Image 1 (tube, rainbow, N blue to C red):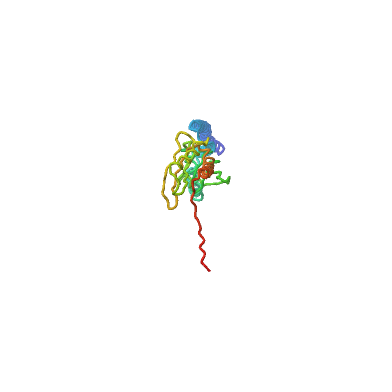
Image 2 (image 1 turned 90 degrees about the vertical axis):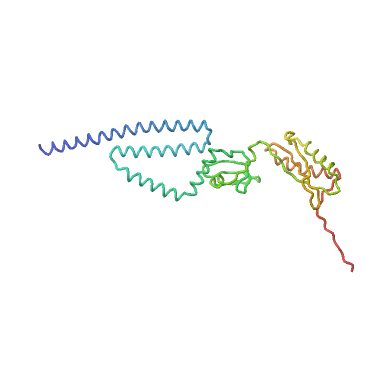
Length: 271
């Protein structure tokens, strides 16, 4: 047997060996890509039914897409005959390094995912969190943006937001306005309660159910303090708060009911 025939046989063997592997890798790639599309389609449908946030859906879809593609590439390389153990080790080490470098960002990402899945807040809610009060403007992957009461933008990292206390004033749809007014000890309690209740019942934005209440809450050093508690729609909270405060002062003045305030007495010594 001459050298040319031996070389030809080796080439044929190599072609048969690697050709079959390459064909198998191509088939695995085609089938794997089709399976990935089915998985992503099913996940997209499930998230739409669960009404996930648009930002979360897009991010999770892209993340899962790249993870599945990387797995598919590793499988295809293994089918061809490429040693994938070291490749997987490199990916694991790179993932660990990236995770350590982005530890804070990953915590914020996890917090954003939790906020979007469990939905303790939504856009338009009035909330109090991390010492700030504002209306939720945008919930992003890493941060949540609020519009403060003075129209300032407040940005809170999702990690701290999801791990802290959140007071959502919009969940129930109605709110109770808690106000306290003090009158002098010479004032008639029944008359004062009537004046205060008239202010509440005449306001168009105060709800009749639950009914507003006026009660004596404290006998202070220089005043009888009344707890004035009307209910209103959440959107009307501040309008009711400021209106009742102003109208109460006017009503008490008109009724001749004294509102005590500190007095300074000037003492002059005889020359």
